[in-house]
Length: 318
Image (cartoon, rainbow, N blue to C red):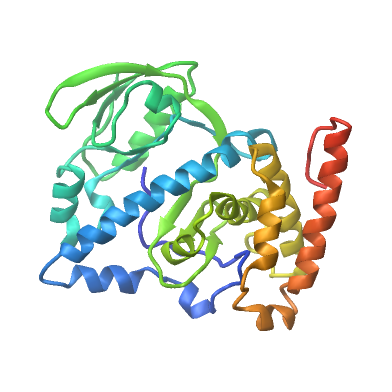
């Protein structure tokens, strides 16, 4: 199910944290301004970009989540689709969401389907409505709709194969079968914000729209996602920020990326050449390591990984 568009989260970014007041609720001003416009055409553009950014982020995060499941404390069965419903969107903007996304007042719908995923192989399409999973009806409305759906989905996807009945936007029902994959239970989502940052609340990873616009290369975006995933895996949420925590997350991120098939040489080279707009604050911070310390840390971990690869030794967190 689509996570709320206005979450509360902690700032543990690889590019440097935003000030605490900006990190508290960065996307609220953008959505509020759009919602109060008499003409919602701007929201149509924002919603289209939101869909595109989430599709890209899902594609980049998938190898990290799927190929590192053995390193994650909690896993889930991933069908390769993301769902949403009308209540996930601010009330003044729901008419636009209906027209653009094919949502109706009730029901749970497929928002995006990841390329190459079990859902794509099962011919599931964005815009289809979920009707049943392994013959259990999917709830369409009610106060506890999310809880009921999550329970049904978890049980159905835990099976080796899952029968799913859906309804197309044209009103035709069809049943298909998919084999869900095991993945790290760390959702990765986009929030709209003018602040360039990546965050975690200890459960999910949140990438701001501004960050994704400034990181056009998928390998470099994967480094940021992996860094935030590392914070979740290591249980850093709630701990006082420290240089040791950030350096540990950097090392873990390179392991996650290597396991996922990303080229860490390219990621480190990009990070080294990046502008680092918060360099002065980071270089003089007691809670975050300097740029040089992080680069030295990256290089040392890369050397360790390469040595393990030469001897065909399984990778793990050091």
